Structures are given as C-alpha cells and as structure tokens.
Image (tube, rainbow, N blue to C red; front, top):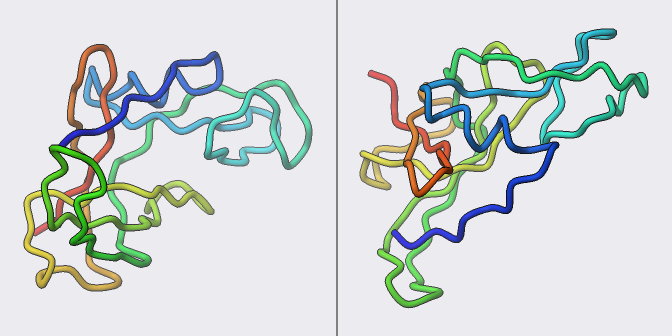
Length: 132
C-alpha cells in the first residue's frame, strides 16, 4: 500500500520512530499523568511542559471502523480497513490506523487488536492486527 510518510517534528518523532525498536510510544504528562495524542510538547490538561514518550502495551480494541474500496491514488490496494482503536492501557487515547492481516468481514466493534509496524525509510507506521 502506498502511504505518504509523515514529517518528523520534535512533538511526533518518538511516536513515528518508536516502532523501529518495537515500541508504541504515547506522550504522557509527568505532572498529571494525562496521555496526549496526537503528540504535543505541552500538556493540554495542566499546561505542564513535562511531557515524555511513554511505552504503551500496544493492545486495544476496535472502537469503530470502515472499509475503503476506492483507490484514491495510484498504487493504493483496495479494499483496506481503517479503524479507530481504544488503547487498553492509555486512558482516553484513540488512534486511527489501518487494520492488516484480516479480511474486512472479520472485523467487529470491540474486537481485540495489537500493534504491529510497517517500516518505511526511518518511519515505523503503527498498524493493528486482530488479537487471537
């Protein structure tokens, strides 16, 4: 699948490169324990600048999903599934990701999933697979 790569910034580098070592990294405020995604350098809850990448388990569940059957750009393989994932150990954090390794008809809301990564250049894109 052709995926545009994100531009690395001080805020998001840990998120986009943590998967190179197998880690899903979510920003966390050291002062109030608030999880922050998308990544930011200032906590939106308490305005602290004490935010750091925090290793997540990578386990979650499907909150919602859709199946795209339209090839929006050349080289885009269809169908593919996009989902919003609730992370089990990161309260309030939801990720929008591709679901890989499953047929669209196998997906359901609430299904358990686990993170995997697709490495492209120096970026590790989080994708999720159904957990068996």
